Structures are given as C-alpha cells and as structure tokens.
Image (cartoon, rainbow, N blue to C red; front, top):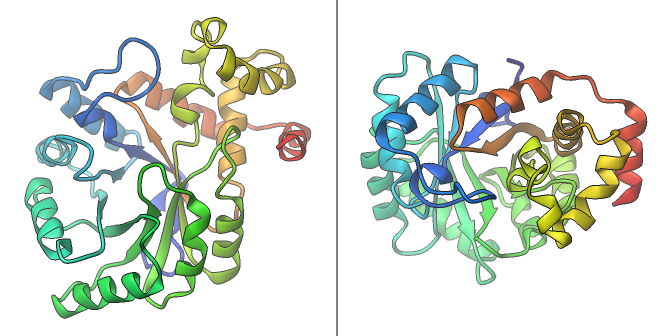
Length: 282
C-alpha cells in the first residue's frame, strides 16, 4: 500500500487507516451495528495489518476499543502506528497514561479533542503539560464529537500542533477551509469517515430506499457513476484524499471484507470528470 509522510511529524503512514470505534461500541449503518466478539476483533486487526492497513485510530470514548485493540495487536507481527485522543485540561496526563496501559504501549500520535471552549491558550497549556512530562511524540487536534471542525483553524497556527484530524466526505464538507489551512501551513491531515459511515459504499444499496434523507444526498453521486457502488466508493475516497495535506484516510468498519473493499476502491482509477463534477456539486 502507498505510504505518505504525515506533515512534518516524521511519521510515514499508509494511505488507508482503520478507525476502531466499532470495536468498542455500536457504529455504522444498518441493523448489524454491535461490536464484534474478541476473536472477530483480533481477526479484523490482524487482517488489516496484513493488508497494509497499519494505522489504527482509537479513543477512550470508544467504549472498550483501546483495550480490544491492544489485545489484538499482541498477535500482529507488522509494525503499526497508533493514534488515540485525550481532552486538554487537568485530566490529560492521567488519560494518556490510561490509554497507554490499555493499548500496551504509548500511542505514536496524540489528538487533543477540542470542544467549543478549546482555544489557542488551552492548546498551548496542554502542549506544555505534555512536554513537562517528557512527551516527545507528535500532537494533533481534532474536534470533539458533534463540534464544528472550522473552529480548529486558529489552532493550526500553534507551534507544536503537527496534525489535524477531521471528518470530511462528499456529504459533509465543513472541514474544507481547515484542510486548506493545513495545506498552506504544512500541517499533516487525517481524514476520518471518508465513506460517510457506509452511505458511500455498497452497504447502502439496500438501505437507501428506506432512508429518504440520505438517499437525497447520495443519489446525485450514484447517477454520476452509473449506479456503480464500487465506483461510488472509489470516488468518495479520491474526493476525501485530494488535499495535499491529507496523508491517510481512516475508514471505520468491523468487517474485514468491507476494509478489503476500501483497499480495492483506493486503488481503482477515478474519472477526473467525476471528481471535477463532485467538487462543483458541493
């Protein structure tokens, strides 16, 4: 799999990463949203690494995800990169220490979960706390669940903020200006959920007829690609990854076959006219 440098962090990451929210809590679309059992979770992690997907994104907020990921990685021979999260504030050191215990080692990248109250001063304070405790690995910022990614833009100017991680896909482009700022500032970017939780994949085929809101959003792109769901997935990944700052696309799934579909879609050529149309449509 293609690998790219993640901004100025010194990390070189695979083009596709695995988001592990689904290992610890319900996620995705459709009726089968429960986390997999321990054996299935381990098989997913091993299969991902074997396919070259060696970047794993997790969080203490994802239920048992960190613990399950840590246990699963004990049987993985390939070197992997781990990304987790913590909130800025007094609990930051304890949160990072607990995550490291659950994962079995320190993460390679720490994302600060930034809510509406998190400004440059709070980020500077968090970076200083980490430095005082000997943290020398990269730090990034990401919006806390449900918060507007546009609020991150001033934080990218802070020395020590090397990465931004945002949700961005054909159906949600709120992070456009943040990614442009990352392009201009040399900040590395991770794209979370480039397939819109599955609505831009073949799994949506049977669900769209009963979900008119999502169907109204997806249908124009389906018409563009001739109702070819594999082509839709390829277009979605090409769109989400087009910014120069984007090093990796982090796909969340509990199913190894779905991850392998995404790997194939990533390698599939996309008609430049489709991408041009998609950019204009948004």
